[in-house]
Image (cartoon, rainbow, N blue to C red; front, side):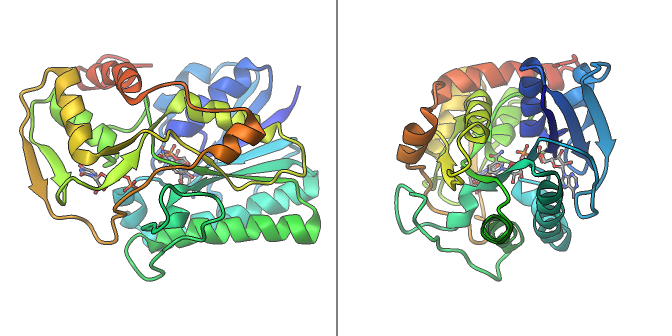
Length: 316
Ligand code: NAD
Ligand code: UDP
């Protein structure tokens, strides 16, 4: 049995990961400051003898004896990470330093939840891991993008300088149950708007693209990445190559919910990337992984969760 620390474990992705790691027979410590996560996401795990909850901010050091660390603590939706941008960059950078220090002392393997945002507004399409990106260092998304880029640098330097066993996954847009309905990200916004028959808010002309990965596919990739041999550090992309415009996504969600919502257009936020699609050749080769769940199937698994949330039923 391994003892595994999941920072950001009460968030959307973290809660699914904690569940999976417990199912595999591990001891799991979930560390979270509940900035964007919630105890609701992990309430069903409380009471399990192998699950521990720690209220802690990753910008402060944390001491425990652990075998593996998944470092997810960081707000992920643009409205949330821009709410307190200085805190966001501190979370990424100081959080990485604290968790890498813990990994160094305990000789734990450590996996960083990095992001497709390290590619910024990409000029290379689809994005391959060797691409260095096109990131504005002084824009409104920079606190997140540059924080995550700096965290990758720290991971590589702890690896080169101190032989810390690191793993970096670059996660592309992921969705599924337990996304916060007020999160502000596109999939949750559109489903909530569609279910309430409210206007669907497209930012810009809606022709920008994203590639959406269902949560179960991501968790599988993360667990497989952690299990790879020490000589494979990544970064490795994890995402679903199916690429859609925001207009296509809106129409799909209207159709699947049978909504009466109309599409309206709102200003495009600054530095919003125009296109995004993962090249997953490396993940296929090194993890023997590729996503199994197509967008429509994943949306059909996600919509009932939001229906429950909106009708006041317990969705968990
Ligand atoms: P989320 O907001 O649901 O989860 C983040 C969790 O981290 C929350 O529980 C939050 O309370 C916690 N947290 C934030 N700041 C913290 C701090 N200073 N100390 C301790 N805990 C803190 O978002 P998510 O979608 O689950 O994202 C999880 C991770 O995956 C993030 O690091 C994010 O950057 C990364 N990621 C997510 C996506 C995606 O599409 N969901 C894409 C790329 C990368
Ligand atoms: N978006 C949108 N309407 C919304 C929320 C987001 O059109 O209500 C757009 C947003 O401008 C971006 C895309 O959807 O082009 C994905 O946004 P999200 O915040 O989900 O993720 P990110 O931009 O970080 O990929």
